Picture 1 (cartoon, rainbow, N blue to C red):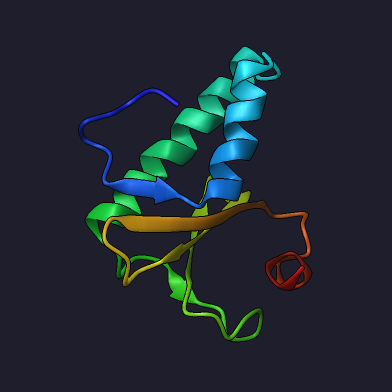
Picture 2 (cartoon, rainbow, N blue to C red):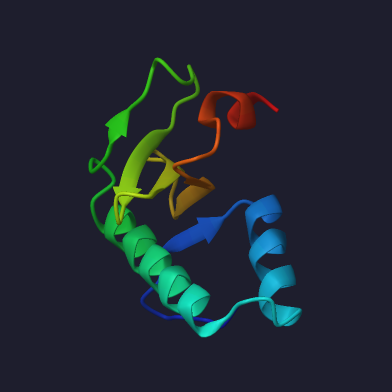
Length: 102
């Protein structure tokens, strides 16, 4: 992924590998690139304000907060990490509780 000097966010190795594989493989269409850019901007937003989002104790007891993006995606992040660590990005159709534990 390109370096962005403004970005104060890290992705878990698994999430970074997932994104990198799709970017390198040319799997992103232009619409996907727009969504990806929006997700990266949202990641920066939560890095700038880690108190954004909310706890979802009904989904996990892990110390992560969730931030909704475009009404369709959930960014799960560790608000105590420096730099901010994005744990997962979920589509709203996913079973978040199962995916967090799986």
